[in-house]
Image 1 (cartoon, helix red, strand yellow):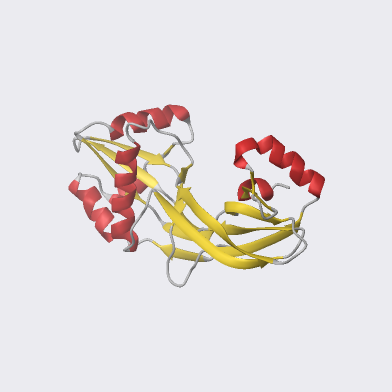
Image 2 (cartoon, helix red, strand yellow; image 1 turned 90 degrees about the vertical axis):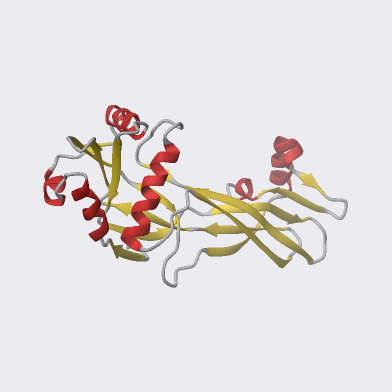
Length: 232
């Protein structure tokens, strides 16, 4: 079950469709072309890049849920006999995913359409991607590896349609799903400290495999990417 579901207010979007000569009821009666089909995605991408083609996004609702857990920054291993205090964390960029693919040359046009739709339908902003900076100072027990784990609130546009109007004379309806970072109401991203005992031999093997991406400090601390530590 999603954390939150918000219905769309399509009053302004429907007004835009009518301005293109397309009645909303007629638009919704059109058979949608699934953008998961590469052939349909190719046509959609071509239309996005044409100056005299107007593309309008219309959705039924957006739902919010946590994205997949992501390790942030470096995982710190305490190989000393004493408790140490370290700042863990770093920066991570969370981007948008789609149920379809379009050429990189028209992606900016696509996200411009999505941003405009979200603004008028939900009264919110849309970001193609967001960079988060998460840091926390914690004690680390001897023999333990600790890192920060981020679960970003993601919003999924469902019932998502893209209506393409070719000079107000010919129309296409495309259907696809877009998911990107975004919060609403009192929702917040979830940040968790993960602490785990790793075997010394296991840590040595991983550090050797990582090469320069594993850092051994003079004070007995080893750092490896948190994303790697999460797999061990």
